[in-house]
Length: 133
Length: 352
Image (tube, rainbow over all chains, first blue to last red; front, side, top):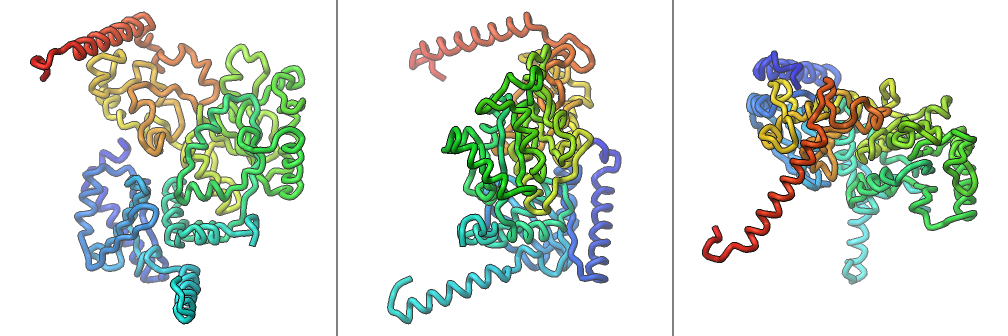
């Protein structure tokens, strides 16, 4: 943690914003999503708070409830997302800045949708047969 | 569909977990394994398609502490379910079968999974006198290792004993105990040292293997870099006190009460590579230094025979000394007893 202290929080935040800019440029050029793993960086709580403040709050906020909670929030920069995943005990297991049109985890997967189709058909078949599923 | 050909994705769907849940698990695992976040989607996809991974677990010269701690990972989470998904085909302490029936099972599993099974070993391998000091069914541990290693995809040396010989190897090492890598040199081996090892590290290695079909990146001692790349000291929350020169001088002085650095009390954090300070123990509750005791360096080779012992500082200081520690302990116990006596005998009027 000491290795980066000489930089100071403001310069670290500036460096991370530059990295976000690189990811945005990459997305616009190649349509390829990117992310920065903030837990893997030696950032102080004050630096994280400063970074979160600089990115600000945007138009979308989503709460995912699976294996604990996940908060997925668009920042004031469209396409730049602040994502915080916690486990069942409330421990933060991942903290990311994601650059994507929509974070992958918000999309319903094809396999889950196939499962939905099967279940909906089962429900409607039960109804037609006059039974309660 | 039988249990053996069901994919992990199908099994999780059957248990009510969506693919989002699996992706979230993969995101957390990539963070834990220090992989680029972009690998999470590929990991989730590979995990969803994965079939059961056969694991044969042999216990050699050991205390069962490694198995005990790893069983504590059991929880109704995706991580717990992935542990269920691992097919632990042979583990003497856990399997219902015993004797010749168990031996037959193992040989059938080996034949059916030739070149694919993971061989997990806990305990050191005694090699003195033909390995006679530890036998299973009359067969020396070293012979079993040499028999089952060639057909394994990789070997997991779980705990400091399997990795480096551990406590059985401590001086004078009467059984000639060694680690797995001293016997087997032509197979991929991952060492997961610790006495015991951290359960989450084994989970991470297993998930990586099931996801990508190979072991994660290792350091020069064959330990997963993601968990053993830094020292306890580098990640310790008491590190700022070390930098400020604030040290506890005994286990009950003002420095200890203030939570200062335990370096002078023999903490081996600066030379010990492990993830205790970040992953912690018992569902991220704590780790030895957080409980007020220095790191013993249990994940390093020959930790039991360190010069000066556990309570001598790495700088060569004498540490607190047993006499002082003993007096402090007696005073503490006596003080506690006196306080308890006083509390029991307080009259209602004197209660605060």
